[in-house]
Image 1 (cartoon, rainbow, N blue to C red):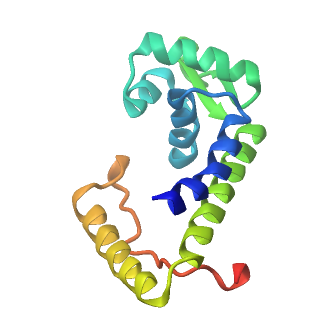
Image 2: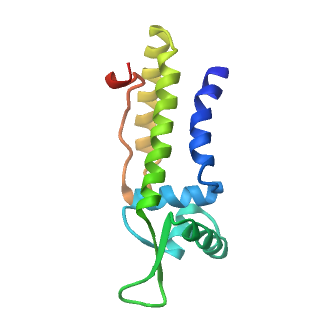
Image 3: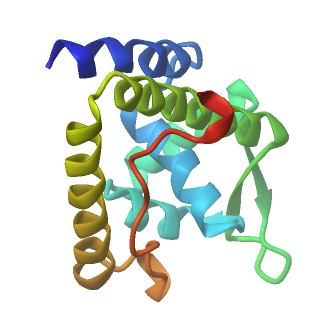
Length: 153
């Protein structure tokens, strides 16, 4: 377990830089995955918190510059929440830290451990795609390799 704990330090550091709660961070990832601005009620449903809690969280994150809020084009009563360029950059930064952490973890495994992890991740990917479709009927990729990329070796 110490191997995994050490690998996560960079991820936690990258995430902590933005001073976001887990709910606020989840909002960024939900919006990034959706690829479009969302109404507050949609965002609340996807994140799994109340409209009131979502509204308060959005207010805070809009002030940080990671999210934007605008009126809906066809109904001014609806507020659309979207990622700003800074929000997209934050997601990229956190994603890169996550990737480096996984690559560092996998690089320390011996070949047998790496093969076992590869098989387990492939199985997990297939089961996830089959049993846990993403919102909107989107399915996750069926497998991903546990071998570090050539660029990181």
